[in-house]
Every structure is written in structure tokens, then in C-alpha cells.
Amino acid sequence: MLRVRHTSCCGLYEFASGGGVFFVLRRSGDRYEETNRGRYRQALNTYIALVKRHHAEHLSRKERPEPDTSIPTDEGRRGEPS
Image 1 (spheres, one colour):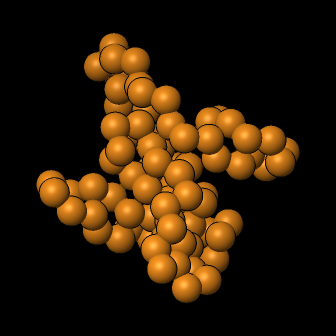
Image 2 (cartoon, helix red, strand yellow):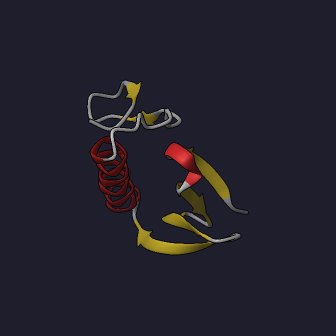
């Protein structure tokens, strides 16, 4: 069973899991494609890097990114990627 754990700004990226494997999905038109798969920390690091880049693209266009759903931080608190 697929479980989406976190969604990025604009719904461009999804951090998901299924069958004990974690992965990052990227919206492509009307469907999603997998961008990375692996253990939790590996997939989460990829998701955070992609979200940071996506936010930077918004800021470079002088746009305000939409809020993401909360993701766990290294300190164990919930919040946006830093």
C-alpha cells in the first residue's frame, strides 16, 4: 500500500513509502514518476534537497512558496526543511 507522508509546495514532490521502502515522487503532467528509492534517511535527504531547490526557484522569481506539509527535522521536531 502506498502512503504519502509529506507533500511539497505546489504538490510537485511527494515523500512516500510502500512495502517498507521510502521514495520520492515528482509530478509530471497528470501523473507521478519516481525520482529516488531507498532507506528512510536516503530518500528523505533527496526529498529535502529537491524541496530546497524548488523553494529557491520560487524566490528567484520573487514568488512566495506555498507551505509544505511538516517533515521531521534532525532535531526530532516537525517543521519545514531548513
